[in-house]
Image 1 (tube, each protein chain N blue to C red):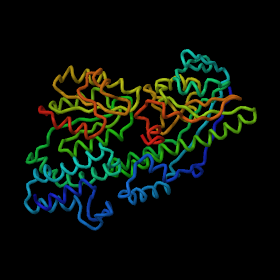
Image 2: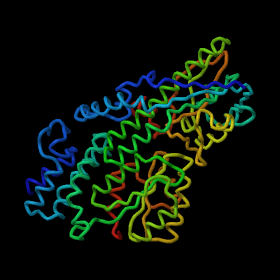
Image 3: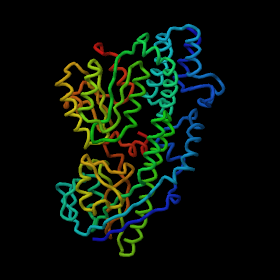
Image 4: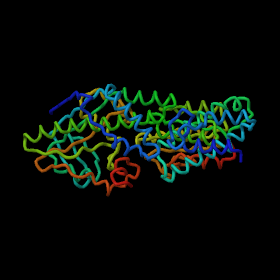
Length: 223
Length: 231
């Protein structure tokens, strides 16, 4: 494999944003995801290869370590930041259609709830896995999910809640989404949830961590 | 009914690095970066704190051992087995709230929106710890006040922990004057400002603070239980 691509994977996995960034200490002074993505494009490497062989494997690696408890939230956040810096360079290719994402994922915290850290972590990890992510934010009304689905009818939907008092609000969102878009896959997540609750409200999948959501989404064929 | 309200000096709230490490999870590799952010938060965070806390002491307290309920001013609270054990001998209940205001939460979210996720997350943790530490001061005041009457106080217990449902916040807030300490409750029982806490503290001659019995709690997603027992 190309040396630049290999280095890029390492930069994403270990959260090396750019040369200026002192993190991680073991890579201090070295170029990061920002410079390497630019170098890769200048070297004529196809944007799709940069994404699929360089960036996504790096995010997958750190996501896997996170779900195994080998790294913590700070490492995930730094990896996501490195990923976002790299994606800035690929944005024109996404816009032109030269690089296609795996699909579109709409995510939001259910209405009545303002908690967003877990939701943001999932959004960043899914984006890093090659998906286009539309983050609707917090306190998202059912209509907002439906309006966005109208624009992206083949997407998957993720709904988050942190409180036992707001997790019940997910049921009406799932019901209305499924009524209007029966083929749309709905993922749910949040501290008080479990698979039993997910099944009860008619969601397709409960993910306890970001990597679980990525694994489920990657298995979908219709997005 | 006895109501007390305190405005707490933000610089008096002591948060140490280890508390943030414990919530965050910090490896040797990431420690220097985290420390840099923590230094900034410790320097500028206190200016963002607007700390108010207080309590109402309810004297009409009854218990129902069969239902594991405590009735405060005639309102039944389903506090579940673990909390009931700690509060059942209470002659009075202090209904408490405490907040640090909105500014730390807003700072955290501004940083996150600007792609400074880790820095923003550390502000969020700082806010959560600040409101708990501020409540320690309110609780210390209550302890002193009650000691004068020969009573002790229990640990504090909040809806959302030890099986006590968050939905019971509505009943808890109905015991307090509207907007007490500047805190309001949404329809979904979310406190505003977000960085606020509420709950009960038992009071009585036989009441003493005891452990939180986290080891027998089955709330596998509770941060405090998991941190305390390294689960």
